[in-house]
Image (cartoon, rainbow, N blue to C red; front, side, top):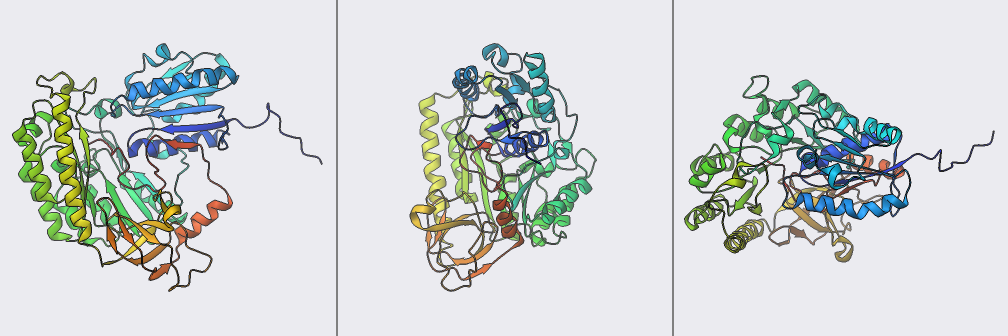
Amino acid sequence: MTATPETAETAPRTYEVRTYGCQMNVHDSERLTGLLEEAGYVSAPSGEQADVVVFNTCAVRENADNKLYGNLGHLAPVKAAHPGMQIAVGGCLAQKDRDTITTRAPWVDVVFGTHNIGSLPVLLERARVQEEAQVEILESLDVFPSTLPTRRESAYAAWVSVSVGCNNTCTFCIVPALRGKEKDRRPGDILAEIRALVAEGVTEITLLGQNVNAYGVEFGDRQAFSKLLRACGEVEGLERVRFTSPHPAEFTDDVIEAMAETPNVMPSLHMPLQSGSDRVLRAMRRSYRQSRFLGIIERVRAAIPHAAITTDIIVGFPGETEEDFRDTLEVVRAARFSGAFTFQYSKRPGTPAAVLEDQIPPDVVKDRYERLVEVVNEIAWQENKALVGRTVELMVAEGEGRKDAATHRLSGRAPDNRLVHFAADFSQVDAGSGVRPGDMVTVELTYAAPHHLVADGPVRALRRTRSGEAWEARQARPAPSGVTLGMPSVGVPAPLPEAPACR
């Protein structure tokens, strides 16, 4: 029997998902990809125009709306030249600007929000049949996103959502208005997903939530998050557990104890500071003060001396004085962060801080930002230099070393999540058919930079893993290339891509 050749009418429609923003958006895009593939779409081959382009947007970044409408403008003539092409806009900016997207960009076919990503295939089909734009924005979650089909970017590391939404009211943040109040998953559902991922070859998971350590508030268990960490320690085959991002106000000693006592919970912590000034923290509605924050850092270091602690800091918040800024520098020097995401404050329409008086002049904000970055980088460099000579086990990563080809190195993540570029020298080990992302290598650190470490000696040990096998198996069935990120490469779900989850 002769197969019927594929024609333009019978060929499956292709897709591309473009993602901007935080880890939650990256994980949502994995679900959007899974939904599209379940509906029969296939990833657009590299270099070819997709039949469906989906923008998963962010409302937190500066000029997010200008970037979106600029990209939509570039696609208008492309769509005109490709009959049947569709454009969909989802995510936080769609939730916020629901009434203006199709007005400013009438060639958009579908607008959907943060609470109904599962509606995308139906909305695309409805827009195609009815030949008119479909706008569907829900005010609250109808289906927990983790129940949706997911096409994960990594074969060896995965995000696992424990909650969505946030109950905080930080004056600089619009996310609670767009993601809604916190909704928690049941512990059994989370652990079932983790076990299923491990069975597929995943050995590292990152527990994800807008305010991850507040997990349990919805069902009234204040120790639910520490219990979840301990339960992860009992999952056979799960080697690394991380989480992002906690809030200092809810960071309790039972979580520190669980981190210290659960072997597969990694010694890394991202603890957002935002400001070191009590007066500014009060204006931000951050329900902790400088002393509490430093107390958490001190207790974490006492329980986990080798922990790497990173943070987020905003400079130039309305009303910030030079004295307030010096308080922030003081906390940075005391906390000795291994890295920090630093931001110049800018107005976000819809946030209380946007209408505060005493907005700081841009040149003052820029000057403080540059001074902060200098201090942050100097401390991070000192902390990294103290590690030179140590032996560490790395999980080999994919897409994390942009210069690896030129330097003849590979890259991996240490247990404390520091990025290490290591020489591809396997002369002292049996490398077999080669090292794969997800495998483990043991190396000696030989050089430190502010944002990474280098190991230029020979690899001392190689441990081939189920994760490496899963990565190798995926190469035989290439993963879709239809998810692109509006940020540096995020091949491995690390806790800290360019724009951390808002908290």
